[in-house]
Image (cartoon, rainbow, N blue to C red; front, side):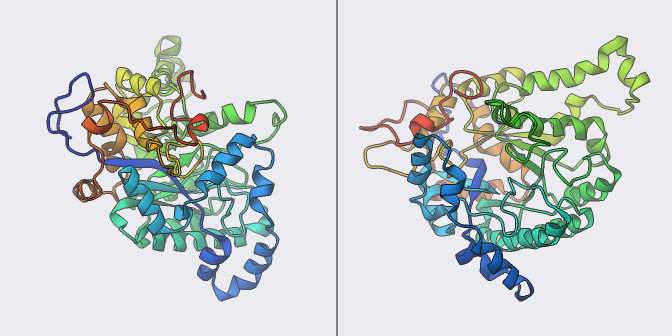
Length: 440
């Protein structure tokens, strides 16, 4: 990446369009209309029986959510981009988004087949359910591969794999890479039915992901290791990110990155200014006890520091990046590991179904977070870092896309706040304009 001149307004000398790549977007293929055609005849009867028992997902899943959030979800459901690639591309083009990383779960309540409790790559599976759950994930992956085949240079589809069966997961990763998907939706450590992430059984899986250039990509809200404190207000929500963050140290300290240097790990939608201190503390433990504890008691024998592995193998999917988070990343020297995300089409993300008179909320969010920051860092965080991480993406191809869709230039959205005659409908519930800590 070239070093570019920038001024205090956040513009640069050439003012080329920003190559925007969202590290966090979601799809929700419809069970009957979209996914059923990908079910093989052997499992079609079971599919239909399962689908018939789903009921009204929106009512069941969101009935206890605050009314304002339910209304915001319904507002964004007006776009068919949840499941229709052409509608999705129209939404992307309008926001100037050149590329995207795609998770399941778009808030339209459409589940992965046979796997309705699957949250971003994991779910509590009983032995009776495991075989069909694996079938359901392959059904979804087949659909996703076809979905991503339209303007394929713009999409990184994340495969759902049956992590309770390592051999089957390896086969699914290899199939997914060949089919054009670009990463693995990786569960949190200690998820139900899944071996510890440092279990030797995982070594061949890590090798397969590294060889296939399939980054392990975890998303907050993947299942917790238990529900012991589910009745304590806020605990499940505020600590959901922490369970995801643990994966960094587990893979680093157990030597996974030393043995698989090409393996990449992405931790997505874990808000807050936590990463700098996390990296510092990961190194600090090596010095405890006068440099003795880790080496002489715990058996640390890796040739590099934790921060060195993190700098080469770990990325942060910074969904709806806040101003303080971006400033901290630059100050701490970690801006090159940050990857901005829209969280499309979630109600808490930067995208809002358009309304006459309202500015594009994604552009307002970009201004709120990045105006006045060094443009070379901004260009990295909003797109170029993701292109480096996800090797299915190509810089030249996405530069052409950005030009074709008239992606915004720094002078257009970073020099002055995008305004309209009214605020975007969902701005009040969006997490993109946070000013107080990780959550508000």
